[in-house]
Length: 233
Image (tube, rainbow, N blue to C red; front, side, top):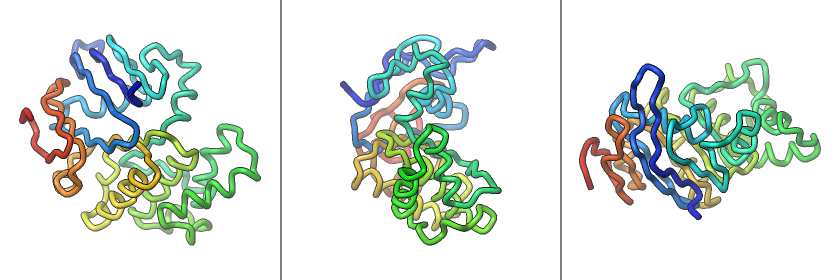
């Protein structure tokens, strides 16, 4: 079974807008996949369905053995524990230190304090912020804040890391640093990465699998793709 399997999936909103139309995609463990397309093509809707912020109107989404389409609201936490999620806006808690922001993800699932500290230190070490554990978000650069967000997303060692425009608020140099971290997590720890982006330079440089959407429809799926919207492969 594939780690992520999307079969004949539709998302039709109440206003009649079809955001995703008959989408079928499979992603293996350890893949790094970019999802691209013009604004309004359905990228964000697809990502939201993967972590069950949105429910598909029709079709199936299976992630790590969980049928997301049929998952009750009260059981969504079981899915989220398999995922790490990184957003464009950092969503850090301003009154908590770097360490506390990352630890909060484990405290919220009831992990004991003695087990939390080594996991937090390891996650911060992976993103190069082990020396900033006592800093507050306001004392960090944008790139450092995004590193904290990545550490928070991976601290529970998820199988899948979902990234929604993680470099959208960053300059090109900092964006490259963030992408190098994501690439390392993918290669060294076999974390599956699914990332939405508008950044052509990142996609073209990294030569990963590229899935392109147009009006909710899959228009291309290339194993070592480049940023070519609306172009069949």
